Length: 296
Image 1 (tube, rainbow, N blue to C red):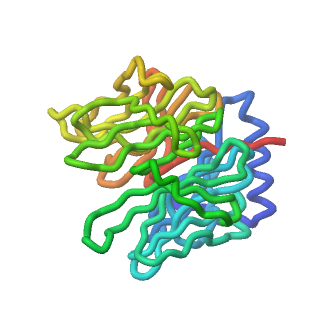
Image 2: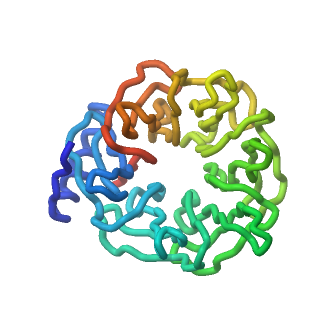
Image 3: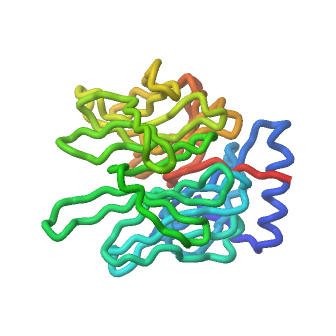
C-alpha cells in the first residue's frame, strides 16, 4: 500500500468530508504509525480502507489524539534512539513541537486529559544502579509545569472521562497490573490480579469499560485483547490468536475496537465489535492506531 501525499488544504478537506460521512456510513478516520517509508511515520486513513494520507514526514510513533481532534501527541527518538521525547502537532501535520528533552530517558505513551489542557506520559530509564525504572509524568499541553506523579510506578497512562488515570503498574517478576488512581496519584485501586503482563489500558469514551492487552493465557504466551468494567469486574478476553494482539483503541461511540496484530510478517490493524465479533483487517503495515474525532 503506497501513501498518497496531499497538500494541507486538500488534507483538511478530506478530513471534513470523512467527518461528515461518519454519522451516515459509520466510517471513521484513524491515525496510526507505519514504516511504509522505512522508518516510523504518522498516517491517517478511513476505516473503510480509503484515503491514506501522510500527516508528517518526520519520524514519530504512538499516536494520541486530543478530545477535540485537532492535535496529536506522539514520541520521537533522538541520540541514536537513546532519548525518546514527547511531541505535539496539529492533526494536519503542522506546528510540530518537542515538549520533553531529558537525555537517555524513554518518554512514551502520551495521553491527553479530557479537556486537552494536560498530557500524561510514561518515562523509562536505568538509574545509577542500572535498575530499570518506570515513572508517570504529567505536564501542560505546551510542555510547561512538567511534574512526576511520584506515587504511580508504571506506564501506559490514560485518562478517564472524569479525569482519573488508569495505568499499568511497574513491571516486576514478569507481572504488571492495571490500576486506576486520582490525577494527583492518590486513591490507587488495583483492577487486575494475575501472574501476567497487562499493559496499555484505554478507557471507553462513555467511561464504562477499559480495554487492555494481557498475556495471562500462559498456553500461548502472547498478548491478547481483553475488556473489563471500569471497576475491574467482568473481565473478558476478546481475541484468541497464536500471534500477539496489541494496542486496543475504542471507537468514538464505544461500539468497536481497533488493535494491531503481527500478521503476514508485518504489523496490521484490525477492527472488531466491542464483544470481539466481526474481526476484519482494515489497514496493512500499521500499528499503534487511534481513532480520530472531528468536531465542527
